[in-house]
Length: 420
Length: 177
Image (cartoon, rainbow over all chains, first blue to last red; front, side, top):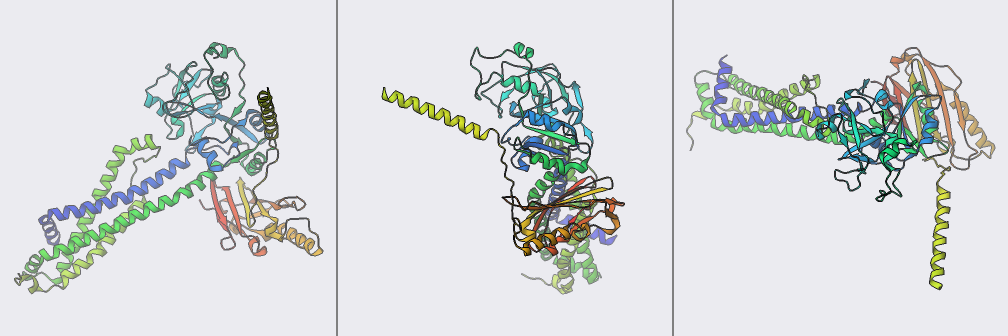
């Protein structure tokens, strides 16, 4: 008890330095655990973006490119593929279902996905979670749209509103499909995946939007087809960007993949999303390791900080130590006092660090999730976190043996002799 | 008049050439597969107790040439390679605990008569009594064929994807979840 009281009083006596040391330990703890959270969170949200899909097929380009535009809505397809090829492969004996998607248009910076109603039935994410509608119903008519959660939340849309789609990407577009407005009929529940940032319409709608366009340019005044005229037309999609495939049996996956890759009539390519996600993650993993190295370095710097502040304080505490010794305290007691102080500093530092981390997660967690799509949920410290905390504690105690040893070695007379 | 004729000629030429160009490229039927010496592919997939392992290795890496064998020596080399690859257990090693047994004659093909590059393609079928113990796959062929330097491996087993690069020094793909 005396030991704790002395340590506490001595620390309080040097509030400024103690506070700064606790702060530096705390910051390094926040950084180390925070990076760990970002790492696992990123991996989880990354790998749970799409599930229940065996193959993704598109025009032959790079596997990562195909994954990025079809799943993450990043970048663009090199080519489209013909709807006839899709229909042929959809009827392949091994295929259970196939969902086409058609990309290229946008609505105020959000991607428009032309697809089939089956998309809402079969698309899965995070294991076996299905898309659910927060409000409304799936699109059925030509000029109807279902919005992703974030699109509706950010642009404050409700079921019944009308929106205009734009040609190409970008928040500001100079080529609007203003003559053909869409009605919002449904809004999807939040998924934490790029689906939240998508505007879904039917394949026929994408076709309808561009039917009166010629050579990639909007129609001249007077040449436009009116929505009423389009509704009467029999619209058949001519091409799509990619399609998702679910097989009847997974065992045939490489066989079907090879068949698509060697498809005679068109240069197609099929990827296994799980495999490419893993490969992509391994690629990104280098940056993740670099982050980890930085946080370990920060931790070492803070360890040296703890050591330095204790060593520096020793000089001003020569008298304190000498008084302790003169009233009968043993050399080992002085050693233990210093170790206890370091224990207190580290424990408070860890407490501060963990609280700061949870505070940051609580305040910015949901913002990060909606902005970057990174899921950083609040959960109890993992066993890995505990291992980190214990390692930090042990390392910091080891580091303080040096100042404690110096104090132990100093003679009784050292602090009592008056020096100038 | 003359410049006008030239103009017309130009237009005609451009027009026909563009048609010819379109005609040549609108139906791409000649696809050329990428081929890299020393790099093969390995696929593994499981469902229930069924496991299929596929390998595709450039012929050059196995027999040292990629054409129809000409000399008796080359012929016996191909025959020996085929004989080796046809026995699943001589080419692949799976953990004993998984109790995997080949349940079908392995399929081994080599398209050595092809004009371009040639590959050895193998398909092995296994039935594993204890699939949860399928924790690795080792390719023994690296020891047999010194030309084999690299296999890009992908596996779908235990409801998860596994990817890796196998080499003579690391001929094993871990399949632990």
